[in-house]
Length: 307
Ligand SMILES: [Zn+2]
Image 1 (cartoon, rainbow, N blue to C red):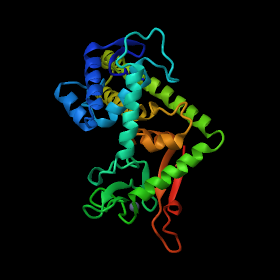
Image 2 (image 1 turned 120 degrees about the horizontal axis):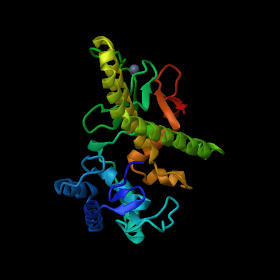
Image 3 (image 1 turned 180 degrees about the horizontal axis):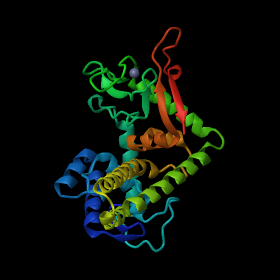
Image 4 (image 1 turned 60 degrees about the vertical axis):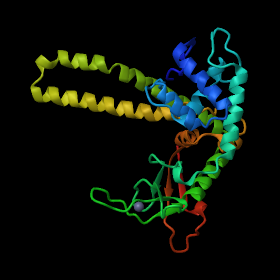
């Protein structure tokens, strides 16, 4: 797991500068400032996430909601030797309540619709191209569509589906699946596997420097073409490992361990968490065209490929 902002390591130890930024962010939130506003303030002050990125509302929510912000373990129990914490448990609870309240009020700002089923999570059943978020007319309803074909892209452009109905239907089916006996255990296992994989990839990425070093030492023994090929392959491998790791890191921190009522969790969870849960349990959703004799009901137009 990546280091949590505000702390020097996973085991605690306050990072004074980062902790200061987060505490200020919390106090701005308590003052009813919008999360986007608070992020702008943090970014302007030079605060960055542990990955060096600018703050965005979803990230800020995730970090401030983290049990470790108040020195708690995943079960909400105080970790005895954790040391100074960014927030008090009470402050964290107040923030959680605030986030839940805001999520309930969000009247779906139409222009900034955050498509849930992106990043390859949904695909056109006719041509297997990824569906993309789009609006047919400005001000129209969010829609997913197979993009029209163009040079270098063989998509069919013939399938589209209403965004809200598509997402609601997928959510319904996924939550129903998660209620079936044994599924939660299976999800925990999938998450554990993904965390293991991320751990291995992290070690692999960290070992890249060593591998390049070993390769350079072999340079004298290799013909130039072979050396170049080996270097290229090592680079490619590193790129792929990093990209997969970035993807996994979005999934593995999804806080569903121990959540009893997943349906309630889903209603208030930030999009990033919803997307992460979907990424854990499904490979993708295929969207079928509206065809002869096929009902327009979205549930009859989607095929979920479970993991
Ligand atoms: Zn298509």
